Length: 320
Image (cartoon, rainbow, N blue to C red; front, side):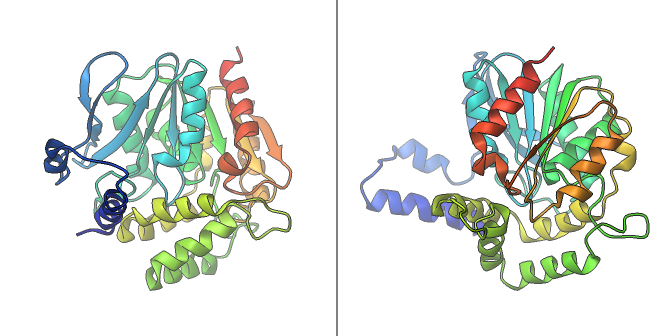
């Protein structure tokens, strides 16, 4: 049994024991590995899985109708990290799509292509399979790198706008060309701590992610717990290899290929992706980029500053 299956099974068992739910026999029989299925708002039955070009199965959620907005999540989470934005935009007349990155959430834990090229091609697979057009691509953290590499590799023929939120571009790791970056030792320590005790590592990381270690922070235990739950659903190999992907990939050339309106959003107290070596530089590399910075906001500002982020995101999407 995988860690993900154990978590899901434990949650279901607890609910049953408490008498909170009763599953019909058909549902119990289908829980042994059937792919999730649903009927979308356009009335056609579909499986909520898309096959990437290397055969990897990618889970996605597709809500609402109207202009399309896609969401690429941060490491090591899943598409569920966007629910606060997805529901808000659906309620404002948009169709929203969020997939789980390979190796994360409900997508297949593939052994290969756990790098930015692979992530970008997976996003392309989702966009093409659903035949999305004039889409706004939104990416947070590692997902921002995914959006940048998608535009670098696949262009903007299906893209109307782009949004980078607390995103990793242009490059995180320190080098002679990027002396302001974080030393490689920082990421080596991440890898060592992750493999030593993944569960405790994610619990510790959640505190910095949401700025709960700052004086006066108002971060609920529920927010910290959901970060742990989402993180524990990722495959260890996938999460481990993704550290190299988000820290060492240079997106400079990708950002130079942006030719659509782009919004760069970042918290000024981001302890994970420092704003001065990411958003400030990316905005200079993207022609005509609009910038919004949030004083005191952490890396996980889509949760801690949800209402403000949602309002700013909607205003940018709606702008002519």
